[in-house]
Image 1: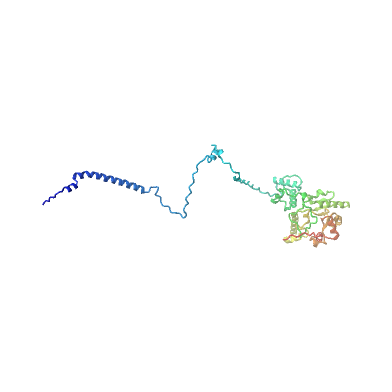
Image 2: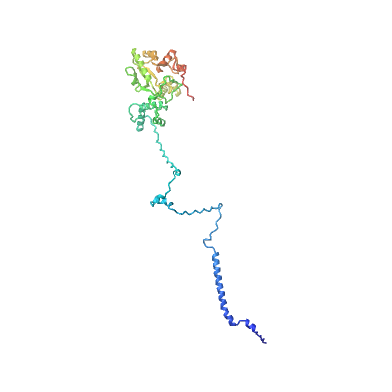
Length: 405
């Protein structure tokens, strides 16, 4: 059954015709496509802005315990001609007139560079037997100071050793005849005492077992007896024998007086002896006892030796004031020469140092040939009072102090 729909004019007017719809469709499609393109462009732009660049993708650093301080920006300095002046002045581009004038008050005082300290040369040690330029220079000093006669030959012999020991003794050095650091400091220091400045000899010096001399002690005013006493007055048994000059002159006067009384043929068997020479006499005597008595101990040999030979350091010969006067070839005791000297020696400043009566005080057996110079005044007092030197020093308050051990 068909239905007949009746189209009214109004409905017909509202409903477009097919032709009208066909005309509108392309336009809508174009608008929709344009809108889609715009949306795509906007989305691309937005995604580009929100997406981080490769440089912005930095791994997050692990924060350190102490955050690094943010550096203060360095202000940009506007170059000026004055800034380039030092460069220009240095390299010849001008600009010296732009250099600022330094303020003297602000100019630092330059610190002087310390001079390098020179390395000291090793101090030589010179002893007997040495040769060379250093020995010669030392000899020149000893000659200049009056301790050595002759020329500086650069050979360290006996004369040089004696002169050096005299120098050391006067200048309060160990008089061992060896030139080491201390000796060179004094001899080259400009303050050394010359022979003329040596302190005067103590003619009353007490030397015995209780008051020994040091190994280095040596008189400063020694002379060769051969230079003082002519051979016509006295024979000097050993060449080079020395003694104190004052005592040697007094000895000459005394022997000339004896000669005037008809006595001569005197001999000086010993005078000054060093510590070492005295020790050699002790050793030789002990060896002789050991040879004659093989069963004796060294101690017993020394005890026997010390009855007649003084231990080193206790002999008056080390003072240069003692003389052993003898008559060649005979025993001195009982001779006319011995009797005359015992009677008159005090008149010239000498005493017979060791007698049997004073043995317990002096510690030595009687030696009729041993004469000691003490000076005329002291000798006469000692003879008048029958005093030995120990007693004289005690009565006169001249006893030396003993070294504390």
